[in-house]
Structure formats: structure tokens, C-alpha cells
Length: 562
Image (cartoon, rainbow, N blue to C red; front, side, top):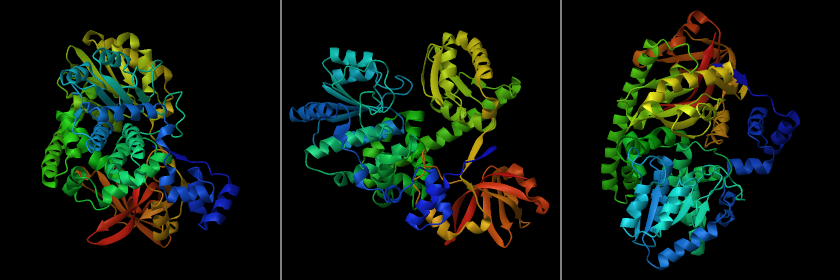
């Protein structure tokens, strides 16, 4: 890995903040690195409050959306809540439908089939709405580019309200309201909401009309926090406040569906990282392996026993997903080796039998072995479909655009995209993609980078210091877990490889009179760097180890060098 030490911030700014907060220089430096320079900014950072949530009516078209929903409720219209099959989509649908069902019994939900209909609003979904006499569709986490589909719905006398957070195209759909903070003409102060976040702003606006406040909507925040974590949106500003309060709900009184998931893993205090790695994969597995409806059913269930049954079902999907993506990853790695493609600058692999629901995960897994832009193809009808994943700093969307002569259609963003092409164009596309990446990529991007906040000595890692930086949470994009570097460490002599296939490294690092236990996941191959009292440097985050009722600090190693 490339180790990059972040530049030191302005020393005067650090000193002023240190004085204002009465903290040590290390803590003040970490805060200034995160853009927190004054006492008031620090107060908002450490103690998120309801005041940080913006007025939902600042969002363009919010008044139109609320008026149309109120009319529908007044006239007893049938309302269809439509959302995508991923975590952001299914939590959005659960949130909106749960709220509207407190006002009407004419609410239904619709999640498109990943394989039959694909991403976003579908003609099939609109036909379902028409056949079942729905006159209003509220689309969440999708729809901002669905110009033709919304026009099709209008021909059938169905209105649309769109709640999306993706960047719009040149033309907006002809919907009653298009709620999207990324609209050029939307002056909403915070642009980084997830789809569920936009949905929450809509129910917040509806609640205000009823004289209710943000505090009255607490029961929905576990869904919002789950979506924020899963969709990897920046955890700053309004997202930070929503995630902060949402985690409190998850850890104190989660809805039965989320509680049933947590009961399976017996985790006590969840962080946003736990949400990403425990809750989100299970919810996602429904849409990947079976159907997103299973996730919505789980997340809207109010009976604890039924929720347990549904959670068990979804856990089975997740176990199936794990086995499937592990098998396909192994097959893909063999394919790369057999084709002598280890030294290329891209990985492009294909097998018609691979499960479409996991090819995105497989692409990410391949990057763990070959750190380079990656596409995994499978058969989808009479076409080939692929998920693309990229390395940090390289825009895979632009690379696909340069190869568009060989592609039927594609969409996505800088680091993740999807595409389809005709089988006969696969070889030509594969070569064109390799040529384009070879021509445009900075070779340094092919070595993963780890950004280090600052250097520490082992004596600086104290329980007090850990307690303070723990309050920087919730962590995520825009506010990542602090990463530190310490030089000239030595092992006590008992360091060893642990875990299945000796994949992990466990040791006790010493520096002078100080020592700390270290765990390095997937660093087993670096064991020889610590043997025979050799000095080494380490990059790590600080963590707590809970063992048999005892709690102690440990270093979670990210990388080591001799």
C-alpha cells in the first residue's frame, strides 16, 4: 500500500481550537483536519441536535408533493409506494409506506424485480398500478431520469412524485413533484441526502402540516441511518445528525425487523460500520438472491415473532449470497490466471452461469487481489450484463463512455457502473477497455493508498484519547475513522498468524516501556516482518477488544512495513 501522511493543518488554527476546547494538540489537529475550526463547530460535531435539520420546504417542489399527497388522502385514492431493490430503496419504501399507512388503508408497495425489470421505475410497475387502479405513485431512490416512463404513466392517468438523490439528466420527468437536492434549481442547503433521506424529508413536511415535529418521527430514523450507512453517502451535516439519532433508535428501540436481524448476531452496541456490515448485507441479499419485497416485508412488520421468521428467511438468502459470491470469485480468479491476464491493467471476466445478483460484489472481491478497474459479466436474456468497479482516483464511468461503441447501454458513477452489450461485442469491448485504461490511468493509482491522519507514539494511545476520538463517530465518507502511524515498533516475540489459513496477524507491539495488542486482518503474509525482534512501522486505527468481560485497547492494523 501507498502510505500518505495528510498535511499538517495551520498551526495557529490548531492552537486557537486547542485553547477554546481545552483539549490536547493531537485532538485539535484531528478536528481541524475535518474542517472543524471553532468552538461552535466542535459543539455541533460532538453534540448533533435537531436544529441542524433543515426545513423540508426549502426543497424544490416539496409544497407540490405535500399538496398532491393530501389530495390523494382526502379523496381516498390508491397510492403505490415504488422503490429500488437495494438497501436505500427498500428502506425508503418501508419508511414511506409505514408513515402513509397511519393515514390511509389504501397504500401498497412495489419493488421491481432485479432480473425481470432491472433498476428503477419500470413499465411493468406502471402497468401494475394501472391494472390495480392506483392514481398516484411515489417513487423513492429512483426516477429522476425516467422521463419516458413518467410520460407513459400520465397517458394512463397516473401521477408521479419522485424522491431521488441521483444527478438529473438534461430533462426532468413530467411529474407532479421532483424532489432531488441535486437539481440545479433546488436551493436545499444539504445536497448529499440518500434516497431514504429525501423520503424522510417528505414525511417530515407532511408531519409539519399536522403540527408534529422532528421528535415525533423518531421511529423512522433506524431506517434512515441504515440507508445512510449502506449507500455510502458523506456522514457530514444533516446526514451526520440523522445517522446520530438513527443509531440511538437502532440501539434502544429498533423496529421489529431490524431487532430480529440484530438478535441473530447478538451485537450489543451498533456503530454505523456494524450497520454497513451486519444489517445492510442481509437486507440487500433479498433483492440479490430472491426479491426486494422480502426486505420491505421484514422492515414493515410490527409483530416480533413474524419479524423473526422473516429475518431468518433473509439470513438464509444472505448465507446463499456469501457462498455464491465466494464460488464465483474463485472461478473468476482462475479465469484471469488461465488467460495469463495477471499483468494487465484491467480485469474483465465472463461466465454465462454466474449469478447476476452478486457480480458487483465479485468485482469488488477481485479488486482485493488485482487492484485495478474490474468488470464481471454474466448472461442476461440475449445480452451480456456487467457490473464495473474501480480503484480510488480512476473514473470507470468515463472509461466506459470511451468504449460506448461496443456497449448497448450503461449507467452509474465514478467508482461503480453497470452495462449491457451484445455477446458478439464482448471481445472487442474487452480489448477496448484495456486499451482505454492503459492510455488514461495514472500507474500510481494501481497501488492502494492509505491516508494517515498523523503520527503517534505508542504512549499517546491512552483510554482517554480513545474515549475522545470515539465521540467523532458516526464515521463514514467525509468523517472517516482516524488512521495513525507509529514508527520503530517491535514484537514481544509471541506474534503469530491466526485464523483460517493463517490469514490474520496477532502480536503485541512495544515501544520503550509501552505495549499494546495488535490485530491485523488479512495481514498474515507479513508475519516475517515482525520476527526476530525486527523493527517495523505500523498504520492502524484504535479499537477496543472485548474478551470474557474484559475491555482493553488494541491497535487494528491496516498495514505494516519493515
